[in-house]
Length: 225
Image 1: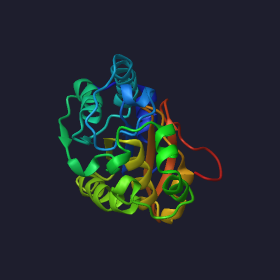
Image 2: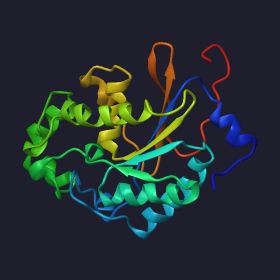
Image 3: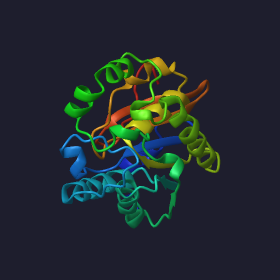
């Protein structure tokens, strides 16, 4: 059962309209080794499972209405922890997978810089780069953002959708949904394992309410409310 009580109810009433919780998967061995995972199907470590269980207890307090996830094990298993608490089914969709990065996949951060330094530098500058011969960030957004929107449109007007995915995919999806220029998506910064970001539906579209959070969102009080 989902967590209930005053805190949960206050969190649910935060903002207006629908909400999207974009939740990154728990830790994997390749995260620890700083290896680029991409679409490689790496499972959670014991620490990653513990992270997912802790985060799930918090996110259950938001009383989500639906859960969707990447079909890669690290995301699907993370989503499963929230499903176990809420009783919701998890809908898996390969459109929510991490960026495919070709020959970069499996390489450490240091190896990528040593072997593909110019390509890496161009990507960090915000140039459209097929890292390792893989996908452009805009192509990741092209496949992931419609999946999110298709599912959020099924929710009630105050419904909450939890999307369990990967750091790069979450960042590009947020950038697309809030209307940032792709060159500026990197400015959002990354997500820590099992942290999440929250988008709220406002009068002028989606807006970023929380980013890289690890605790329950609190209502915004003041002139920006």
